Amino acid sequence: MNVDFIFKIAAIGIIVTVLNLLLVRFGREEQAMLTTLAGLVVVLLMIVKSIAELFSEIKGLFGL
Amino acid sequence: MTALVLKIILILLLGSVLVIMLKPNRPEIGILLSVGISTVAISFIIKSFYNPIKSLLDIYNKTTANGFNISVVIKAVIISYLTQFCADTCRDFGLSAIAEKAELTGKCAILVLSVPLINSVLKTALELTKL
Image (cartoon, rainbow over all chains, first blue to last red):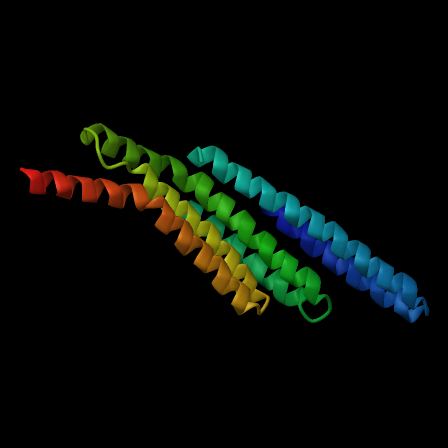
């Protein structure tokens, strides 16, 4: 768990924004929506994994 | 220690800038990013401050013979940090009702955790009245 994690999520957000803008400009609304959904799911998975890691870390450190 | 504080503060500031950048276009990813920043910060804080606090607890355990158990206090602190984390995240989303429930969970858990301590205090009081 380190700082790269934050930058990764921010980069995913920026890339999704750009792709969304381009696809909307080319008139592919459905694919733009799917791109947004895919980005959201990827970020959500990363966040859930990191929270699980944090909780297991706390459990291990304090012997709960 | 100063370098560590500087590091954590820099992480938080950079993360806030990124969240503010993402908020107008992708609000959902901005919210998730803010959760990610707080998990990273908490894991950093716990990892770096655990050993000094642990040594303090070791001194406490060596000097006091028996009786009052310090582990209850540590568990209460951990529970309050975790529930605070959850409540703050919920408040960030604008869900203050759920945040209140998270805090209530923490309060109940700490109350249950402190039952043995209350029990031992009452037992001691009873023994004293018998004398």
